[in-house]
Image (cartoon, rainbow, N blue to C red; front, side, top):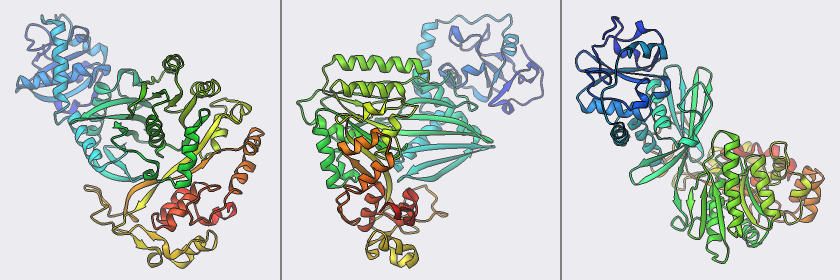
Length: 562
């Protein structure tokens, strides 16, 4: 069978064909009929076809839901193994597929054998240069850089690839839009966990999410994917979650950046048999790392039963029962899975429960019931301050009553943290040498810091802090190496809880600040908010005022809070 057209096959790659006249000229069907040299699974015979082109080439045509899926990728690999070269691919309408396959019978093949062959072929395609192989190379670069997030920003015909390093965004590379789209689609469609996907296939026009386990050598990383359409294109953000073995990593609060007084308070809160420790912050602020650090410490105390319910499990601790909950975009199914884990938690005689995140009304209610049932709970929540956790839990999104959460035994500790880039020790420069006296004066007059102790990140960095393959030419303050926590840790007393219960949040915050007894260049953090912690780090030369103001604003705006 042949359809006469002058359209070159390669021009159809990545397009959708809804008119039979737009199908490229082909000489045979490679997957159907008497001349077939391979086949497709029985349930794909009306949705996927390979067209034979002149010169031993092939063109893949499929229904939209099959593109980059397992059978599609496997068919491409089988054709390659038989010496065929790709001449393009496209999706098509059902009408076009029906015309192509009219009066054609499927070649006789064992369906089970074909499915097994497809699985083996996909295992091979993951290591090939295109398209998953391209994505593998990009992800490997991110891992080597120790990046936390991978961003694809597709606009027009170009895709910008950026990464987050030391809490800051950097450009990694740019590629043709189709290259990035093929790689993202293939990974999403073929590798993503089935129940984590929003829809069956990747669609740039929709907001979608998925959890993708991806093998890189001996390590498997989990990618939390969120996509969203944007003006003239779309964005895809991937959070890189690297599984860790708690204990081997030796996570400690002091290495994260917590001060001795904050660590003492968190240890005191952890030793309490009741109440919840709520760790707040914005996305990407290291909440889960702090949660897992506290979990590691609790796991060393063998006299408690600890059950962790996470999405997904990021750190594994000996002595902890880890329940991995894979959320589905369907809210009802997500609630049912969480509810099942919750019922199992109650029946396993636990002392401590670790919830990965309080993210909605249902999970907030579970945390409330767990604490009121006498269990100790550790969890995270999105909030803008430690005391803001109360406002968040009592908001319409979560729906908890203030009189219930402001009881004396409900909160063991309220924690809020941000991550701030740390000056590279090898190339940092004195602030007095690079900043004006007017810019430094507020730090001395308002906060009492010795400006002679303040250091800035160098403009151009050095061999100790610069990462390979990153373009720093148009950036400033690049001499940073790593990030550290700046936090506030509050063990609320009854007077503070009464203010919060009555909705007097501002008065409660003022009461917290009134507890401060140490100067801002001293390590004692009682009564200090996260910006007070950052000021202490600045007084030790660790933090550039540039990044302090990026996180907390101008020092003059903070003057009223002193």
